[in-house]
Amino acid sequence: MPMSSFHLLPYQTTTEAIGQDFVVWLILRKMVRKKIPIKKIVDVTARQVTFSKRKSGLLKKARELSLLCDAEIALIVFSPGGKLFDYASSSMQKITERYISCSELNLDKLDQSYSTEQGRNASLNKQLEDRSREMRQLNGEELEGLTLKELQKLEERLDSSMNRLYKTKVQNFLSDISILTQKQNKLKEDNQLIKQKIKHVQEQSFDTSLTLGLPLPSASK
Image (tube, rainbow, N blue to C red; front, side, top):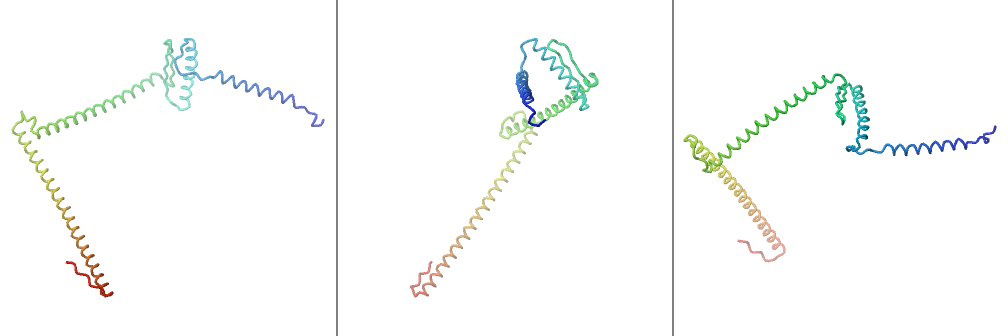
């Protein structure tokens, strides 16, 4: 039979029909699998159905994670009605005890860190209070109740502070003198340079006058 005698129309029609059915199926599938908003389901029946489905998926994922990664997993779920569902990859008691042990260890570390920070804070507060009191006493305040020895120490601090202040003032004064001396020397150098330039110009003018036979310029005083 010649090749032209074959009729492909029925096959093409069937293929087109299957394609159309597939497109319809995809549309319906998208409509059915509409994204559910993540919020509390008001309808009690729908809520129970959703809990049952998602709980099964959660337990399945927990088992898969345990098998794939050799992880110890403990899962505890209470239904809206208060029914308990749990899963443990090995022993629920063993995993729970391990969790409590880790939690207590972390809590101890936090307590130690908190105690250390409290100690540092108390030490800094005491130093601040001591320094503030010393400053007030150096200003002549809160001197009542000080013993003779404490007053002598305060006097020594004042003397020491005055000496440091005097030394600082002397250093600043000497620094100012040094800067002024440098400026003075610089001015002298500039003046000397200007005089040399004036002399050079006068000499050039004198030479030019001699060359051209002009009257000689008067020498500067």
